[in-house]
Length: 390
Ligand code: PMP
Ligand code: GLN
Image (cartoon, rainbow, N blue to C red; front, side, top):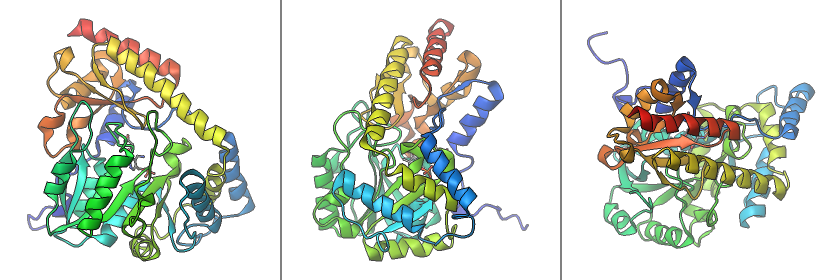
C-alpha cells in the first residue's frame, strides 16, 4: 500500500469512540454500564406500537421521501410551536436525519470549507470533533471549567477571528449538564450577528432540564436565518436505537444540509419515523413525567456518588452527571475508568477525552443516570466499596 496510512489523515487519532470502548468493557466484565448514555428501559409502548403498525401496514417499508415522511415533519413543526412558539414550514424548514449524529455531520459537511474555524464548547460531544475534521475545518475550543461549567463570553469574543464560520452550541450540554441561560444565549446571538456567524445548536436533551428552562437560540431576534437547530427522538423518547433525529432551519440552510444528507444516508428508516410522529404528539404529562423521573434519578445517583467520596457537579440538565475523582486520591480519569470495572463492577466515561486541553478535565468522570433505580442504587453501593480499596 506504499507505506501510506490507510486512514484518511483527517480521521487520524479518532480511533474507537469512548462510548464504544467503555460499553465493550462493560460487556466483557459484566459491570454496570453507567458509561454510554442509553436508558435501560424502553420508551412508551404506544410509540413502539405505532412503529409496529407502520411496519405491518407497509408504511415506510420502501424508501420514504428524502427529507422525512410528511407526518413526522409536521409533528416536528407542531412540537416546536407547542413548546417554544416557533413556526416552521414542515416542507422547507425541517429535515429528518439518521439521529442527531447525521444531522451534525450533514450540517458540518454542508456549511464548512477547509480552513474554516468552528468554535465549540469543550468538553465536546465526540462526533463534533470528527465531523469538523471530516469537513477539513478547524475546531477552536471554548473551555467550560468546573465547578459551574458556564461559558466565559469574553473568551468567546476573543476567539472569533476572520476565519470563524460557525458557533457550535450544545444546550443542555453533554457531558457537564450545563444549560445556557437566556442571558447567555442573547450574548452569544449578538456575537453571531455582529460577526455574521452561523450557529449550529444541538438540543437533543431539550426535555431534560431540571433547573431553569430550555431556550432555543433560534427564537432570538435575527437568529432563525443563521441557525441550524438539531434534536433527536433517542433521548426524549428512550429509543436511542431507532436513530431518528432532525435538523430545523430557514429554507436555504435546510436545502444546504439536505444536499449533504442525501449522499450520507439519502433517507432514514421509514416505519420508525411514523412511531416518532406519534411520540412527538404525546401529551404534556409524558414530557413532565419523563423529566421528573430523571430529576429524581439524578438525585439518587448524586447522593450515592457523594457518599462514595466523589465531588459531584450537579447537572442542570441531560442525563449525565460529571464528578471529580481527586477526593478519592485519583489523578487520571481515563486510567480510573479503565480500572473501575475490575475494582468495583461499574463503568463510567472519562471526560478528559472530550477536551483539547486535557488538563482541564484530567480528573473528571461522567456517569449516566438514565437507569432503573435499583441499578443506580446497586452502582452507588459498589462505588462506595472503592474507598476501602484505595
Ligand atoms: N448530540 C449529543 C449531545 C448527544 O449526547 C448525542 C447522543 N445521543 C447525540 C448528539 C447523538 O444523538 P443520536 O443518537 O440521535 O444520533
Ligand atoms: N450520546 C451518548 C452519550 O453521550 C452516546 C452515543 C454514542 O455512543 N455515540 O453517552
